[in-house]
Image (cartoon, rainbow, N blue to C red; front, side):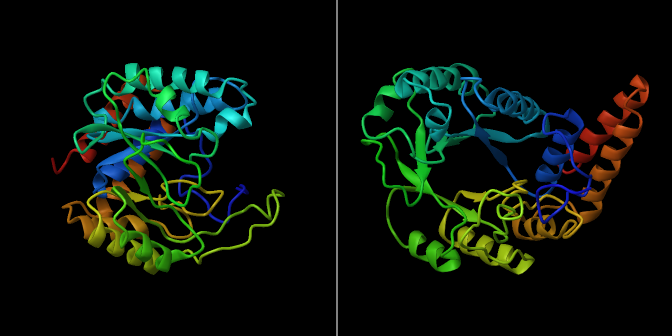
Length: 305
């Protein structure tokens, strides 16, 4: 099926809020040695497509604990500007109140340096002391990390930064790892091959070939320099950074993770998770079979616990 990507999901195009898809994804993560997920979170305004994105995010988060995974939020402060919200700080406060009340209290919410982990894909809109104002709802201040290479500041609200796919590739990562600038979350990725031009969104000035060797190289580099490493990304098909199983690469990226993380699970286990997913779709209208297959899924996921 044609989608806006150079790559195609192994299970075909899917809806991000589908519980069976979510279970497939989280099950594969668990069996690949991933310990948690960082959820791109749109905020609570409900404007533009943020309402649908929020429902999907909530659906994913709701299944993490059952899979033995932690989760944390990656805020998108630029959404405040994109949605033309007049009071940026006021809306950000509402968002932080929601994060504080709904997420930080959950037992499987990720912590870093003893504090709840919170990240922002920016700052791109909020600047300076606006972050301290936005953070007033927090009962416990988070370990707040921002995207590298940003020019806007957080007036002391942030404790470090995280790396992301960039045109300077390995040299950029090496230079960043060598700087002592607070808490760091490293980045492993397979390349960058966006669909922007083909999709009619304008030309994009750079790309990095997507390959297993590139993923291995950035993974090794990150593990050598940081205790916390983000894989960017699980399923951003638009930018071609996905590592979940595709028709083009099948399970190769996850096999690399399994070997590097030293887990007992094998690619055969990953394939069983996929087989169970297809059976759950096939028997979606059969309540008895659906229940049996869901149990089979979780038995697979926790096989090595």
